Image 1 (cartoon, rainbow, N blue to C red):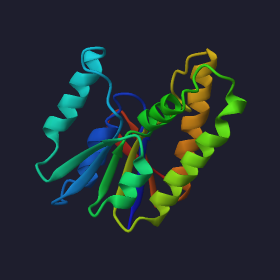
Image 2 (image 1 turned 90 degrees about the vertical axis):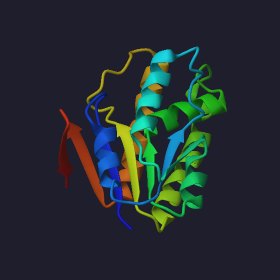
Image 3 (image 1 turned 30 degrees about the vertical axis):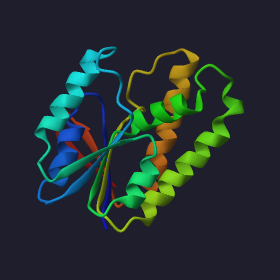
Image 4 (image 1 turned 180 degrees about the horizontal axis):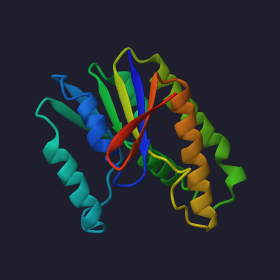
Amino acid sequence: MPRTVVTGGVRSGKSTYAESLLSGEPAVTYVAPGPVPDPVADPDWAARIAAHQARRPDGWTTVETADVAAAVRAARTPVLVDCLGTWVTRTIDDMGTWDVPREEWVDDFWTRLDDLVDAWAGSDQRLVAVTNEVGWGVVPSYPSGRVFADLLGRTNQALAAVSDRVVLMVAGRPLELP
């Protein structure tokens, strides 16, 4: 089945485009790497999540989970993962690693990434992943910002390597990458 990675900058239209790729499907498993932040602590994020949920068709089922690989394996419908940047953040949070030297936990991250890539490559469902393109993004110059950019960049590359299509969104327009 087709596997597509949709990447771009913040507010590039990548989520909307990814949703349009699956719009004709009667049922879709929408995987939100989570759990989503507390709406009281982050009302802006909660508003964005609510807006995304409101525009999804009735036949779409939302699964909020930190274990995206398991959700992909369990899905019996096409899958939309939105977004890999959130997955990277949640994975780092789950490992409790933002404040310790990278060498002490990076192998665990690669193991989790390998599991996600295996699930992605092994699925018999149509798959679409949304992700931020860190190569063009503004990345904070402090150590955790660089770690995030490194890990998300490697995540994007790993999923793209086992996908049929990679689409870069620029100003709401899709550009198919070779």
